[in-house]
Amino acid sequence: VGLAVDPEDRARTWSEDAKSVLAEDTARAVLAHALSHFPTKRGLWMQAVELERKQGTASSLDDVLAAASERLPRVEIFWLFRAKERWLAGEIDKAREILTNAFAANPNSEAVWLAASKLEWETGEIERARVLLQRARERAPAARVYMKSALLEREEKDFKEALRLIDEGIAKYKTFAKLYMMAGQICSDDLPQSKSNLDRAKKYYQKGLEDCPTNVVLWILASRLEERMSTGVTKARSLLELARLKNQKNPELWLEAIRLERRTGNERLASTLMARALQECPSSGTLLAENIATAPRVEQKSKSVDAIKRCPEDPHVIGAVASLFAAERKREKARKWFDRAVSLNPDLGDSWARYYVFELEHGTKEQQEGVKKRCVTAEPKHGEIWTSIMKLMTNRRKTISEGIEIVAKEIQKRREKEPLN
Image 1 (cartoon, one colour):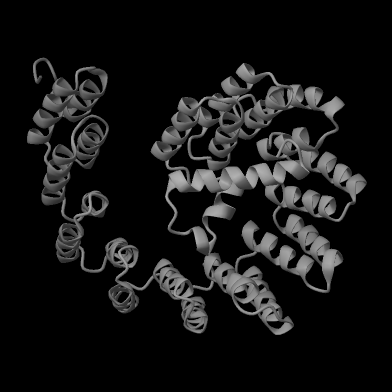
Image 2: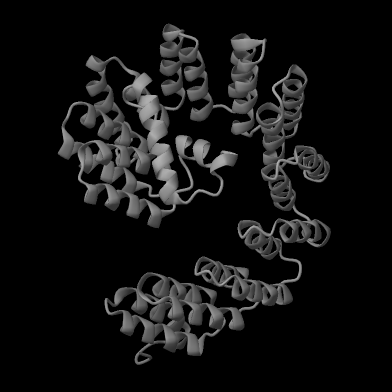
């Protein structure tokens, strides 16, 4: 392995050799040799972990993670990965032991505190999780620690305590937008529906926008709240206009403004806004996909051709074209394009859910299970519909396998109103 390799090039050369060989035993041997010479090289350990994750056994993966943690005790990811694997295997006490050792090596690590509290939280030990989060706020205070603390209380339906923690967190981390978001959602969605609670939500959003004026999600949540309140569409529309002034060339804000007009039946203004949006954001896949989906049927083909020219590798565009083929009963073409969409960005949950809907309606049981299995492996975390459904408190503990079923049903429900969505 080491023949004819310059000493300064050894780590890089052996890493590339391990990637290039097809036989896993050979790759394993190359990495073992490299790590014997460079035992504290994080990149080599990551490569060894990835090899065992993909091609090894649970035992061989645990061995590599244990060795990596021993050699690099201050690198949190190896401890956390190992603890998660043991937890998923049902070895809760072993996972606790690993995290205890991680604490010893990283006493003030936010990530280790959060992982330890999550382990207790997910296994139903709420009081243990609560105590760990309290200690984390004292010893490793951070915005995410306050957010997770409030989320625990929200899930336990102690909304008063959740809001107290949020207020405490905002006082220390006023530019952390997710605290304002959660507070607004608790007031508008979890507490009894009343004018006072909606006004309280509005105040949280207003304060959030003062401190986080570039956070697009906060602007959208604030406008949707206005749409719900007596102030209605006019105030929501003006908020979105202000948002676009402060955050120019942002496709998400344009998309929300367009959809606001469609929800109120103002199709002409929605079309005008779409034209302006595509002038300002000509390469936005989300806008181009929406333009295809909402166009009159006779215009959809030409709009899809234009979108592909502008964004040939955008998964939103490719997914919209796949849906168009499905609506035209060109099933093999649709399948090919859905597959391309999930390959372009496996992290986009909406693409997986739309692909799954297609197979539910036109595929075999084997094809349906194939899409679901690939989605579970990909572990998608993004996508407009995916996140809106999976982040609901009722779905927070759902698996990816359960999630794709729920999101698929939501897509089918929406499609009854809007054929290509």
